[in-house]
Structure formats: C-alpha cells, structure tokens
Length: 430
Image (cartoon, rainbow, N blue to C red; front, side, top):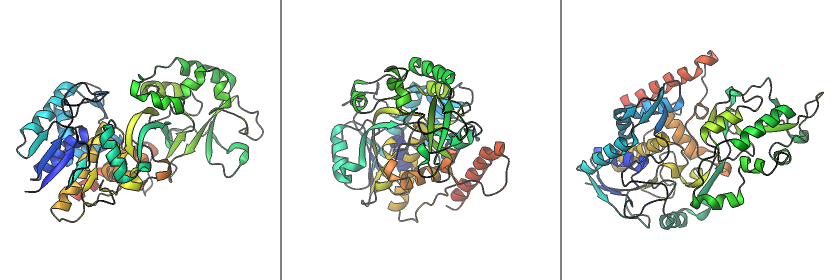
C-alpha cells in the first residue's frame, strides 16, 4: 500500500490526511507540536482554531456557505466535525473550539491508516507529500522550501489593503478619475468634505487594533498601517493615501480628502482600497471604512491584514491541483498557498488530497468547474496575477458572472444554485 507524507496537522493537513487515509493510503502525519510549539498555538491538538471560533456564514447566498456545502458533498472531515460541534451563532457556523479540535485529533489518531509523528520536519520529504504547515511554518522548513522553490516565491510577512465588492460601492457618490487625468480613469474616488474627514479620522485613530505579536514587529518597521500613519497627525493622511491633489471633479471644488479604489480583477468585480494596509480588527474595519462616502454599504471581500504569514507566490509555483509545477508528487495546501480563512484552508487540503489520490491511482485528473467555489478557489491560486498576488477569501468575484438576465438581489442565490448543481455533476460523473 502506498505511503503518503502529510506535514502539518492544522485544518488543511488534517483534512488531507483524512481524505488520503479513507482512500486506502497509509498516511504519515507529522506535527511538530507539542515537541516544538508555535508563537500562536496553545495546545497540541490538531486543527486548533487560534483566532475566532467561527467558520463564517453558513447560508447558500454567501460564497463561503456554498463552499462549505460543496465540502459536505465531498465528505469533508473539518466541516463534518464543525457541524457536530456547532454553537449558536445566528447565520454563522461557529464551534466549540476545544471539542472541535479534540474530535478531529481523536478521529485521526484512531484511524487505522494514519501514523502520527510528533516531530519537526526540517527538509522536504521524498515521495508523495502534502506540505500544510501554515502561516507559522518553522524557519528551518521555510528555508528548505524557499531553497527548493526559489527565494522570490516565499513571503514571510503579509501587508494587504481591504478589497471591496464592486456591487456594494455607491457609484452615485464615487467617481472615476486618475490623478491629474493621467492615463485612463482607472480609479474610483470616494470624496470627503472636511466634516466627513474629521469624523473618519477620529474613528480611525480610536479604532481597536489586533494585538501585535513580538514576531510581527519587523513588518511594522517597513510598512506603516493607515491607522498608525493617521496618529502622526491629522494632516498626515492628506499628504499620503487620502491626498486630494489632482482628483477634483470637473466643475466642482477639490474634495478635502479622497480615498482611491483600484480595480483588482479582470471583471471589475473587486476593488482595492489604495494605501489602506491596516492592523484594525475586522469588525472595526467594517465600521470605520463604511464612514467613507460611497462605501456606506461596502462588503469587504478581503480584510486588510498586517501579520506574519508565510505564503508562496502560488501562481508562479502551483497548478490548479495544488501540485508544485516543477515536482512530480509534491503538493502544498493551507494558508501557505494564498487561501485565506479556516474554511478555505481546509478546502485546499481536501482538494490537494483528492488530486493526489487520483494521480496515485492513475485516474484522470479531477476537473472542477470554475462555477463551483472549490473550482474558483483552485483557479485563483493557480492563475491570479503573480505580480501582486495576495491571500484571498472565497468570494463571488472569483466565479464567472451569470450568463443570463436576472435581478441583482437574486444574483448570489443563483450563483449558489449553479455552483451546487455543477458540483453534483462532478460527483455523479465519478
């Protein structure tokens, strides 16, 4: 029986190990905890949720809710245990985090096809392997991976501005213009008068930030969060990311401040908040940034982040099966691939395992329609622009637009129906 190595027992590694073991392979699962702990983990349990206990929205009008339903169809361990250990959280799937991780740990430890090794892996294993060591990959393994892939393919710190759903931007307030009208009008501009700016400024400098870990301080020496920039003085932002110079609308006075939004995808379904890398908590980002005129109903598809986050430039390195392009049997899963979020990490582990299973059994490759959330996620990882690649939550901006007339308010539900129908078709063809 073929042996497969899985390195890392977080959400992605636990899911991958389970899928492989259920397919009849012997799995060697390596987890360095508790022999060597990370800066963020508190227990030795697998799939420990180190931040929130929420796996986000569970409805089929939400991209992540559809993603979870697709994973249920594929017998996901992570989602199954989350359903078993859920706690009341409105429309979200939240879990008792201790029971959740204990259940996953016990499931994997009792599986007859899984052997667990509590030790650090310091080099890339030979043979079929899935690396799922997460954003806090040890320095030794990070170096081995960067040497194998090329140093320019591996990032150790993540600084990204929020990305906004284009449909949620109020274009009656925002206007198109490039600074000094240079080039084409590629930016959407959110104008503020002095009163609006003062209220925004006060909210920004008093908003609650996430805790800065000692191991993250290096990032802040070279990349200033927008809220820290604001604390240097009320006028600082007006000479930085909110500079209004060259952005006056024809026939109108120049705004006191302007927040610029830059298109982030080919379809124009996502816009990046220019210069808004931030360490604010997610709830605070939503509250404060919705004070910006034109963004009062903004749906944030990816929150701004500034933290230690080891991830690869996936479009340069991986194909849509999460396999390293230059390797025969080396796959990478989890947040290292540039997926963001608990569910997305588990999904990447599920997909990497399913692709590897088919390769080892000499079956035809698994083709996932881009209309599915799993297909969209793997397509993003493999085909995003490598020049500005950043980790991303699953969102409707990653899937093809509907090709028929429909009411805007029904769009997401229709996309959900389309995704699940397509996934059912994949399963039935197996």
